[in-house]
Length: 66
Image 1 (cartoon, rainbow, N blue to C red):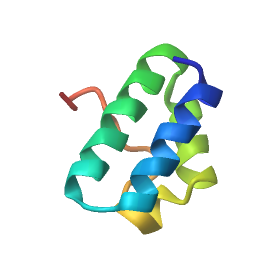
Image 2: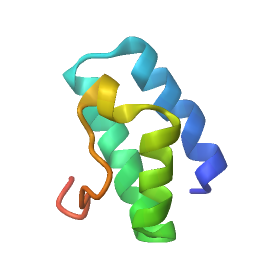
Image 3: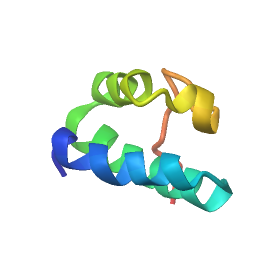
């Protein structure tokens, strides 16, 4: 998945909120981390303000997310 393609589904999850949508965003971030590395994930967390919306902090390792 490209970083550009990941933005839209994460934005939708932010709009809906809730724990299930947080988990879905985490799965997307895991895929981005695997393909593009942690710096790409940190960029999305900052860009989409995921720390405020879902409590996802830059530097989080999403390898264990399943």
